Image (tube, rainbow, N blue to C red; front, side, top):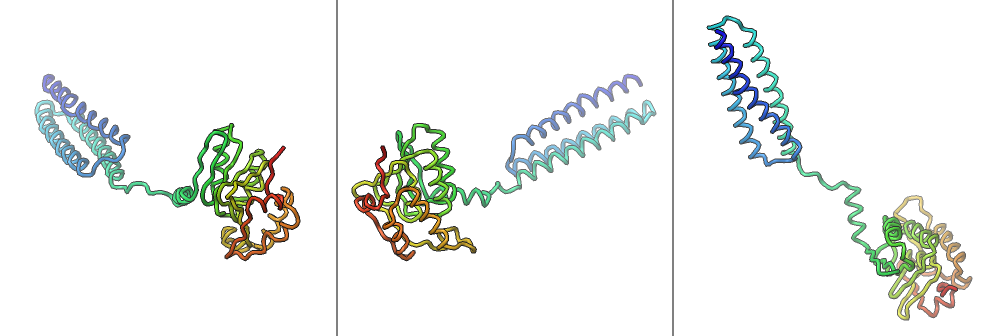
Length: 280
């Protein structure tokens, strides 16, 4: 009887407990790996279920021999409890693995999508002491320029090639340029909201073929805000131009052109209007 008791205990340890512990440890490891193909999980789950049934049947046969020889059932009930616990734990782990495998890949959030789409509207390229801004002045430009300035302390000049964008973002960028004492330069075209950034420069230079474009504000240029007053916004920026040295003749004309058109100022006119500044 003692030998049979020992055989039951030895069998339970070597043939049931240790293999089952290895299987559960493997499932825990798979849970940390991430998504696994569903067909592979299904095959493994079926194999594990078949093996668990095999283990349980083997335990029942060994338990029958133990009861016939010894008469006690305490170990048998302990075995039942063991199978109940490991069976429940296995179901939980397999269920979790299948949930991960069946969960669709995480899609891009709306905010990330908007940020990606806006980033595609412009480019920033650092070249020695110059930072080239090309494209639309949209949300996020100011922060990206600030990051470039932090990453490249040697930057001194912001080169602009833009047909404008959001007035509020352009204002923020203009204040950043002014507060950092950056120079501004245009070699091609800088129009609408872009001109705010240009006139914020400490030294402001237009190339021989460069032009600045001005027109009246439209609601869409302010971000389509329902309470936006284009006239009031124009007056804010007229005062900013005045503070940056633009002369009265220009200030009277800068918003005369309707929003559908554009009044272009070349390098010679810009110098006359006080829009360019060569610095000290």
